[in-house]
Image 1 (tube, rainbow, N blue to C red):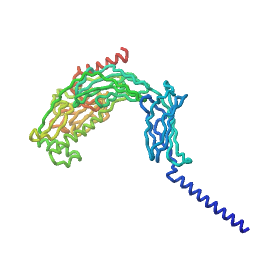
Image 2: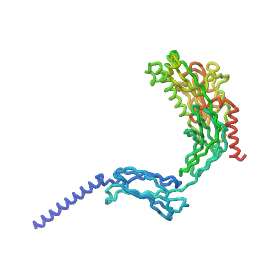
Image 3: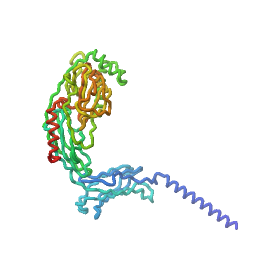
Length: 460
C-alpha cells in the first residue's frame, strides 16, 4: 500500500513538473520576439484604377521583418503570378512595383482585374510559418486620357500681367485639373456648366519667360497636357537707386522696428534697414500671398469687372514692378534691395478710397510695412489690396459693393507721405494694376474671352 501511494505521489510530481514546463514554454512562445503575432501590412486601397502602362505601387511593411510575398493577377477567368520572392534579411519595409504582364494569359480587353497580395513575415508563430496577410485589390482598367479643349483665351499676356483662359475638360474618372505656368499651379474654377472651367493667370514681373498649359490627370494617372496659345509681351521695369538717409532710418525704419519685438534689439542702422525693408517686407508679402490664393469651387455663372479707380483724381507717385536699390552715402555702397509690387496714388490728405468692384473683405488690419491694409476677394482668384491707410471703414468678412468707401489714405507702415499703395493679385501673384485701370483692356482680355466661350458652351 505504501508503494502504491509513493508511486501516485511521484506521478503527481511529474505531472506538476510537466505542467510547469508546458506553461513556461507557452509563456515563452507568447512573449518571445521570435513568436510575435503581428501580421504584415499591405498599404493600398481596395479599389483602384490602373492604366496598365505605369506600374502599380504596393507598400509592404512588418514590425519585425518581412519574409515572402506572392502576387496573383486575375481577369476573372484566368490568373497569373506576376511577382513572388523572398525579402532580404531584416527588411521591415519594401515597395513593390507591379507591371502588367507581357504574357497573353490574361484578356487584354478586360476592364476589371483583381490583384491578390499574399505576404508572410519572419515570425516563428503559426508552426514556424509566420504571420500572413492576404489582400485582394479590385482594379478598374482605364487607359484613356482626359479630354481637354481650349474654348477661348486672351490673345496675349504681358510680363507682370494677367490673362484669362476658358476651357473644357472631362473624364469620368477625372482626379486632378489645374493650369501650370512655369512651375506655378493655378487653380481652376467651374464655369457655366459641368465640364467647363475658367482660370485667371499671372506672369510674374521678375520672370522673363512664360509658358502656360492645362494639365488634366485621371485616377488611373492618364495625363493630358494642353498648351494655351498666348502671344508673349516682355516688359522692362524701372530700376531705381535710392539714397538711404539717416533721417529715414532713424524715423520710419526705427518706428517700424520698435513696433515688433523681432526687430527691437537691432541697433545698427543698416542692419535695421535691411530687417525692415527685406525681412519684414517678405513676411508681410507672404501673408498677402497666402490670403490671395483661395479660389471658389462653386460653378461661376457670371464674372464682370469694371475698371479699378480706387482714388478720385489720384496721381501716380510710384509704379508697379520697380526694382529699388538702396545705397548709403555713396552709390557704390548698396545696402538693401526690394521690389515695389503695387501702384502708388496720391490726391488729398485722408482721401476716400473706394472699392471699384464688389467683393468680400478677407483682411482688414495692420500688416507691417503696408500699414493699415484692407484686402478684398473679387472672385476668380483676383484680389485687391489698399496699403498705408489712416482709417479702415470695413472689417474682415464684410461684403462690399462697387463704389463703396472702404478706407482713408494715410502714411501708416513704410510710407513717408499720405498716399495709397494699390495692389492687385491673381492667385497670390502680384499683377500690373495698370491693365485693370483700363476698361479697354478688360473688355478685350476678359469680357470678350467669356463671350467667345459662352457661344460654344451655350450654343449661341
